[in-house]
Image 1 (cartoon, rainbow, N blue to C red):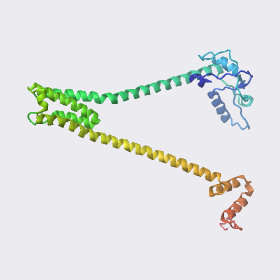
Image 2 (cartoon, rainbow, N blue to C red; image 1 turned 90 degrees about the vertical axis):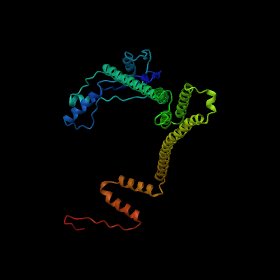
Image 3 (cartoon, rainbow, N blue to C red; image 1 turned 45 degrees about the horizontal axis):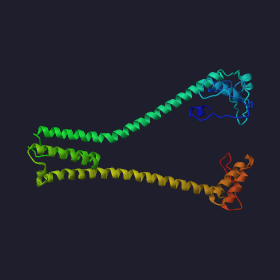
Image 4 (cartoon, rainbow, N blue to C red; image 1 turned 90 degrees about the horizontal axis):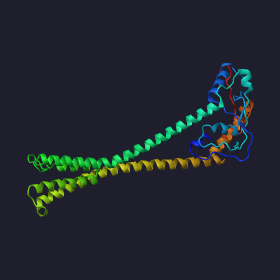
Length: 329
């Protein structure tokens, strides 16, 4: 009933009312009764731990209508199957036990606890979804952000070196470092984007030195400089993508291994099940023998054990030796 309300499912309704009683008892009262029975060395054959009187389903619906938002008191519900109510007369007479927790506040506390647990689970689930979405966004956005930051750093270095990305002292183009970092970290996509940014920075530098845009295409050294950016991006990106592909293939291999292991386990389980069902094989025979020994009387156990031994060994005579008090057979 509580679960249906928490999951927003329709509450169970029954058209034919019947006065079927159910015994609702707080768990702490039951524990207290067991503790009393243990402390007083209770040895009676039965101990019924139950409320003093049962509660009909109609009464239960009336009680829950006070705190259920979707409960309607006009319904006439009943339990479809009869439930016997245990009588706590033995516990009351021999132990003096009486339930101390009333039904109405107990149900109210139970509903509040289940509702709080449900809300907590939903909140944790939503928070997990939000964290997963943020992580997915970060995995998508961070490479582009780092790429832009790298382009700005390369542009700053170019400005500090007098408008050229190539250091005039050591003759090193810092754009290659920028492109290589992006390629090794994130693969060809980010490496080609970094090569594009580097090409824009280089063309801007050459135009600042007096070059013409059309003339750059007919200058072999500068054209080779352009091509080397993209070659570096493709080369470093290839190694990163290959490493990622190796990890992906390793994960696929592990998943395939676990899947095959599962299928083999299911096949072995089915084969063993068929062996147990088939009484002609060794496992069925063993099951038949153990069930035969389990069903005999205690004084007849040794005789049946000898008979079973003879059946297993396919012999007619079985000799049983018994060790006496003096250690003699």
